[in-house]
Image (cartoon, rainbow, N blue to C red):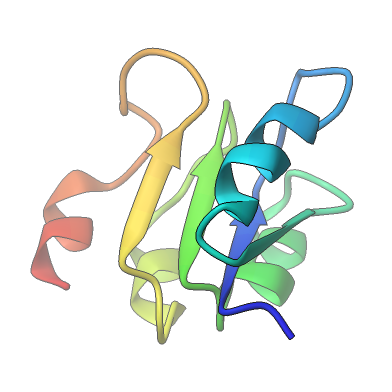
Length: 90
């Protein structure tokens, strides 16, 4: 069983192998959401330790439902799609 679980909200990359390799060093398992919708993302992210996102919107309502999440990181540059004030409350 993995030590950590990281939900991937969306990705434009051909695969997640580089992220999987890096995160496996800390015992983390990653899984890609089947769709970049709030419902599909939350099905994975609700109990995730971390969330990786490319373009999907991560709203304050979503962040408040993430019971264990301590890290939201973007594949790319910027964080305009993450509600930073709510993420900072955790």
